[in-house]
Length: 160
Image (cartoon, rainbow, N blue to C red):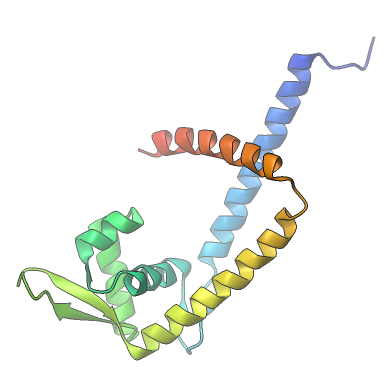
């Protein structure tokens, strides 16, 4: 019997390897996001808290609804995160100038420290990834992006 694989068998093997890599990446990202860290203050923050501060820092005077839409989270989840950040004195609520029913969010001085520290942290991490990707051609990266975007469409549809 021959050890040669049929083209279909080779494709199935590649597909299984791709799935293994995707699951491995998802697990690494989950562990990364679940690990509490300090970002320039004594506060210990989870990634979702940092990303909430980042969204507010990038979009001053944003409302809860706008923040939920921007981050793809429920208003309830955003409210819970906001309350944690207020308790940590990283964020404040201010009245909306045009609508008394809405409140806006702004970073405190400590929140701004975390925001700036996190941005630099991201720059360093992204630079490390870019250095690794320098070993791939533009065409290889474009193919990866196309494949990943197609997979993301399926994952998004399954999540809804």
